[in-house]
Length: 566
Image (cartoon, rainbow, N blue to C red; front, side):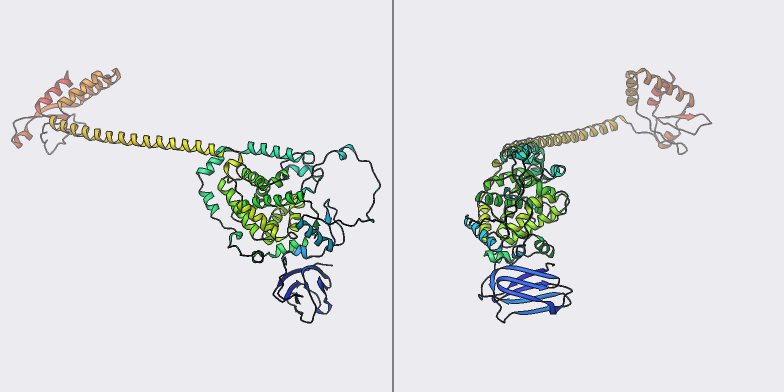
């Protein structure tokens, strides 16, 4: 038989069942209604539900079948009009238990009546004794080996498993960080976890995220689905959460079972659930709701329950462990993200069992699509998805209130964060002071150099105008080449005398070459034309070369002529 896809809803007078049964005949439908028991048959589909309230068959029931969609819709009257049926979205818990027992090493109660009694006993911290099964299957006694008689420590959901990793040695290192879980006690696991976190903590990474927090500010502004305005009542909060078709399909695939847990096991289960929710909330915020290939690693790494098979005894231990791991392992290591994840987990718990179940189904999907993280589904997540559907809503609300009132501070993480931040702040302030001082000194040096450049330039211009006499105009047929004043020539000679032997040799060769190439002759035509009494000196090059005329005063020419010809 095939279990069909189905949904349940309600109004004050009727329970509404929508059952998808494509490719069936309308003449083959068969219904059975009796109190909390509902059965539906349409070959090859069969559905049996255990309802949270009583229904009756009094002639008011209505049925409709949409052939195109293959959808069968049934309205069944409630025995008590106006009664609210809780948990209609918990599809796994509505499915009646199957007759075969699971081979998994969990304490399970697969009887319908006993399952309800177990749920009530779980709420009141009291379990009723079950009748002994005299027809229990017997096996021939075989002597156990010394290895089997050795101590085996438990782990998994509510510490109900053991021996799993003994069969999965190859996948062990890829799933958890604990080396030998079968022979490691809870205290040894915690010591090893704390040592690993202390070694993994990077002050440089933490300070970088602390002072360069632009991306983190953007992550803190992200609003996941659970940040919508909270509902005033638990019933409205749970009804506001809806499941996708894939999530409903996964709920139908789960095997319905109840768990007989003692008080200590229930405490471990609740605290482990909170640890997983915190890791999930951080991952959703850090990726802004878009899972990636690193999502399975992030959820597993941030949860001490999943990564170290840790068992917690109080709420504060969970918060401290989560805070330490956020600052040691993921990409964004900022304490503000720790506080944001705690607030997010509080919102999820305030949305009731449906909100928690939706998050667990998302974690289940992320792990299911990753190899070998799917092992964590078998150890923890699948059982949490089934168990959360059977707990009382007030237990979830109580945990949400406890988490809302709890707080974790930086000093609680024992990573010396306050001292580290204080030292880093001092270093930053010193660097800023040094930068301001260097900027001030550079500005002063620039001002001094500007003033000296302005003063020097004016003096040189004044000197040049003082030492440079007016130059006579050469004839129109020759080119004028201004000659440096005598003082400049003398200064050049003195500088050449002070120069190195190589420079003096070069100056001497240039002087000889100029003397060979130029012919000196007096020329007063330009002076007479202008009415001046002084005569110039005409330097004419040899005939084969281009004309070059240098005109100077008579005194400067005589000095230059004497220098060249000497």
